[in-house]
Amino acid sequence: MSPAFENKPVLDEGPDDRSDLGERPCPLCGHPMFEHHIDESTPNVLLECPTDERLPERVASGPLNEFGMPASGRRLEKYERRTGQAEA
Ligand SMILES: [Zn+2]
Image (cartoon, rainbow, N blue to C red; front, side):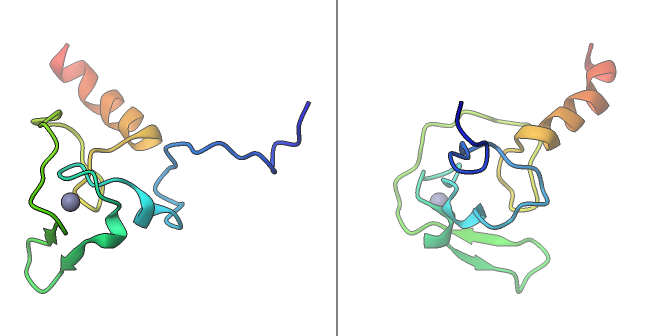
């Protein structure tokens, strides 16, 4: 038995927890988000990768979170619940 608080596993947190967003890997290049420049001066927020390397495209279409990254965890569950019936 170990205390739940000490060894907190890295989970796909819900939208409420923004503390570690910067350390999430970019879906495009795999670098952590904090290495990126985010240009919010236009209606379409631009994400500038620190490298020209790109990960192989995994998700052509799918739920994205507010940072334009593939949704995960609770958000994805919500998305699948919303769209599941329509696509089934
Ligand atoms: Zn990137």
